Image (tube, rainbow over all chains, first blue to last red; front, side, top):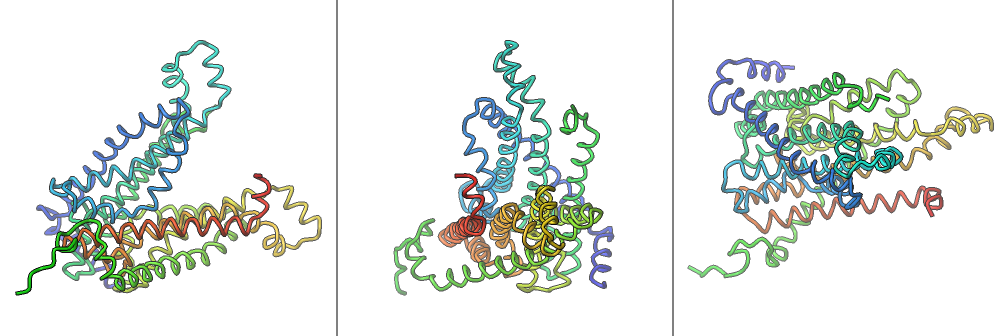
Length: 224
Length: 226
């Protein structure tokens, strides 16, 4: 119990909030890293997945990518990147690692989403004379939205976790509070940092959950 | 002063045979630690997950809270998970095992529950009609039919545990992660690459092994597919 009280004291100490190593700066860093990398990964993964799903090609690759991603340790990739020339541009390794780990779930879910669109609907749309482009944007994309958004949610949670591990390899973000705590052998700081990270991850998850509930029924997959 | 040998170690190359031969014992120890950490934690997770999933299946009201708690646990990043357990376990291997077991538990409960739920009601009724009691129904009908889903969960949990164990390096018990961490601080390319590759190999080997076990213990899925 005393450790928890000490962690709470550390967290509420106003001296720990401002400054370069302060909680506020680390929180912003974490948020920025997660948001930028999520946009970047979506920009890379979604168009590829939609086109592959539309054409019905590269299925094995798209589906197995998420499984393969799980087998590769984030920490190892971060350190490997750090030792390559990428490591010399500041946040380079962190950003590259984050994007690498967010792309597989996005790609797999979007691909599966497009492929699972009712073939009858697709054939009906073709029969109505829709072009490939119209089919993709007016039929397949809207109908695959629930799975696609689920992929975005998984990717976002994955990004928060990866951004935390980045602190082990010298990256910024909330994980730095934890690693600094370990270096100072300060259990209260470690626990306080872990609490912040856990809360951050849960808030991200909750935001997506809320967005899903507020979204129109069509995007939830619960509609007609 | 003796001149430094001009081998791949001195040149700090990524791929280095000399590293493999001179550090064999260190690598072996790290692999053994890695295997111990992951196997103990996944087995612990499995031992807790089976009764939890069965209870959640029996009492419908328990399923919601069980799934909610496991979702929350799974959302917490690994570094934070280890750190939150620090006051309980201190700097020990038990800390890493506990953290990994919690992640495995999450995946396993979900998959076993999904497997149990997918058992057709007709099958259940047929077994009851044959005079099966609740315990025999569970052991002889429901659990075997949930095996494919449970094994899929076990494979995911194991592969994730192998990968997440590396983060245990923060407390000095990360198996191959320790080598990666030390290699990062000393800029030792061969060590980082070798440990990373070994880690992926362990994950792939474990996955294939479990796949073989799955095919062995669920022969009916094989014949159905053939």
